[in-house]
Image (cartoon, rainbow, N blue to C red; front, side, top):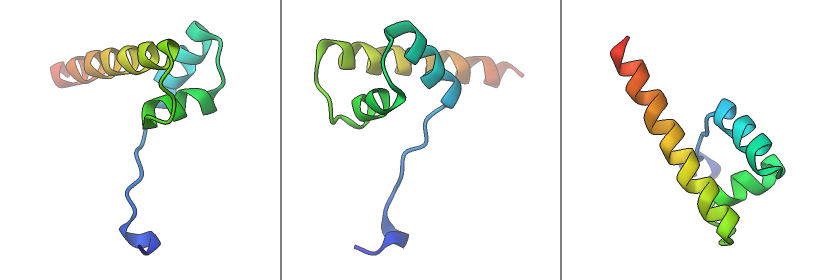
Length: 64
C-alpha cells in the first residue's frame, strides 16, 4: 500500500490533553488506546470519555 492510500485518524488535541490530566497517562498511551492497540480497563474508559467529549463538542458547535 502506498503512503497516499493510508488513512490517518485525527484526534482533538484539547480532549487528549484533558484525558492526559484526568488519567495521568502519556499522550502515546491515549493515542494507542484510541487506535485499539491497548485493551486495559483504563484504555476502555479513555475511549469512552473521548467519544463523550467529542460528541459534546460537536453538539455545541452545531448550535453556533
